[in-house]
Image (cartoon, rainbow, N blue to C red; front, side, top):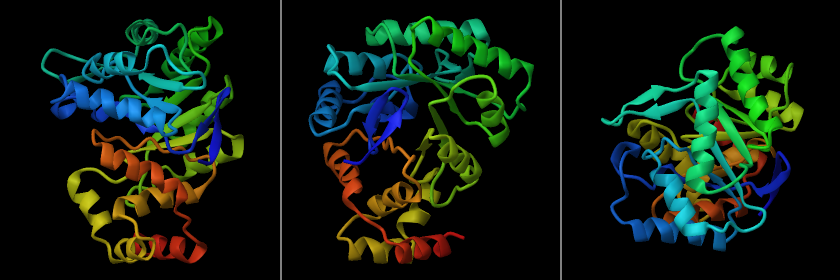
Length: 285
C-alpha cells in the first residue's frame, strides 16, 4: 500500500476505524466478540498499521477489543484515539472537554489499551464555538500530554479552517479528522491547508451519512459506471475518490465484516484518472 506520515509513523493510506465493533448506536458490546476479534487480527495481518478508536466507543468496548486482539502490539502500529466526549449510562454522547477532562480521557485510553503512549490523540470539538481562549486551553492540555510522553502527536477533529490555523500558530498538529465524502465537501479548505503543511487529513463518514445520503452515492450513475469499469463496488469507488484527491488523505473505513474489510483495503489498488475524477466531481457538484 502507499503510505503517508502520521507524526513519527509512516502508515498505509488505508487504515481501519474500529467504531463499528460495538452494539447498535456505538453502545454496548458487539453481537459476536469472536467476530470482532477476528476482524482486528485480520486487518493487521493483511497490512493495516493505523487503527482509529476512542475510549467512549462502547464505552471502553472497542479499546478492550483492540487490547484483547492485538496486545502485545506489533511494532509500527499507530493507534490513534480521540478525547472530548463521554457516554452516559443511556448511551448519550456528552461533552467531556475541559482541560482536566481531556487529560483524564487520554489516561483512560492508555489504561484500557494497556499502552504507555499513543501515536496520536484527536481533540474532538463538540460544538461550533469559534477558536477562542477555551480552545487555547484545550490545546495546552493536549500539548502537556504530548510533552510528558503520553502521546506522540496532537490531532484535531470536527474543526474549521480557523481552528486549524490557530492551532498551528501555537503547536504542531499531525492529523485532522473531519466529515468528508463525495456529498460533503465543506472541509475542502481544511484538507488543502493540511496538505500545505504535510498534515494527514482523515475523513470520517467517508461514504456519507445518514443512510439516504450513502444510498445517493451508491446509486449515482457516475459511481455505478466507474464501479463496473474497475470491477469494483460503489463503496470502493467513493473511497478511491478520496485517496485520489490528495496524497495526505488517510482512510479509516470501519466495518464489522471480514468481506468488507478486504474490499476496503483493496481500494488502494484502484487508480482513478483525471477523467474519472472529473466525472465524479460533476456528478456531485
